[in-house]
Image 1 (cartoon, rainbow, N blue to C red):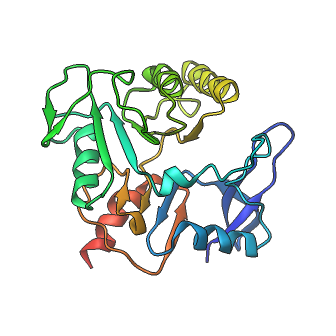
Image 2 (image 1 turned 180 degrees about the vertical axis):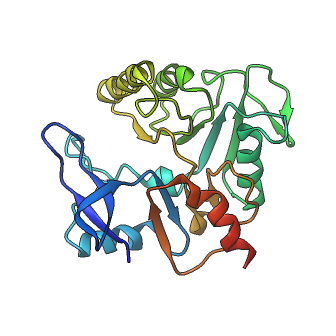
Length: 242
């Protein structure tokens, strides 16, 4: 059985939640994908607190100490940066998944070409988005993500999900881009999920950022945080087919 456990920070590294197994109880791999299927956010994090983990929603550097992860799991207005009108592309399938799950909030596709995608008007830039967007899903190549994150911060979007791979897990050039992202986070205090993830799902909010063609994701009594993005793709497709 795999267990969720709190991983304290090592030296100057960031603390995180990780997965450990009986074979390696002292080694927990960082989680790269979150799936909330049955529990509301307060229930999910309540379980973590009951296990003795610190509350990751509270930022000690924020003077008002407000929860800071809620827009990831209960967004009201979402921008899809890199939305595409071409079926099969990640920016298209992600938008189709959000629509298929009946997300009740506002959706704002962003693509320099403008026009319309799946019946939704497209903004040509992040700066052109309406005010009040609380979550951005960035479906762009790795080299374009730092600029997109800075644009989100300038627009007042405080929570961003980064789908692209090609960072420190690939080569030195990717590591430099990843370091630039870390610098932007420290500078702007923006909240990032990712990079290099397959998306996350919160069925209580009828929301998903998964870009693998899944369609409607039914709600159930289990919540999962998985190290591998495959859980959000082929594994989830298999679960939904049962």
